[in-house]
Amino acid sequence: MLKRIFAIACLAALLLSLVACGASKILHCDNCGVEVKVKESSNMEEDWIIYCAECNESLFGDDPILGG
Image 1 (tube, rainbow, N blue to C red):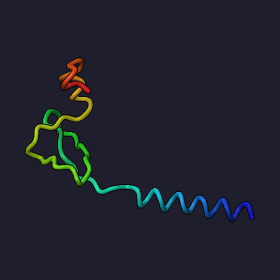
Image 2 (cartoon, rainbow, N blue to C red):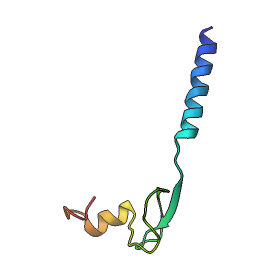
Image 3 (cartoon, rainbow, N blue to C red):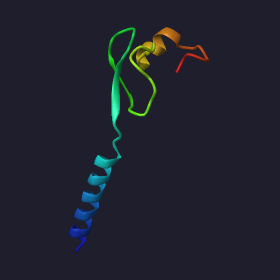
Image 4 (cartoon, rainbow, N blue to C red):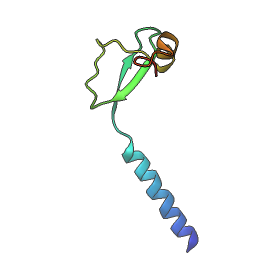
């Protein structure tokens, strides 16, 4: 009985994890070219100036507005 409950709980967790993943679109960092994933519902487009987290940190580090 305990194995059956555990199996159902694992199956439910697996199904929830598959459903919970939202669609995303891929943009590219303007500094290094690495792919940056954003939510599909985001209004960001490829023509925006976009930096990955590493480039943002190296370019703007301690800036309170631009730094991460």
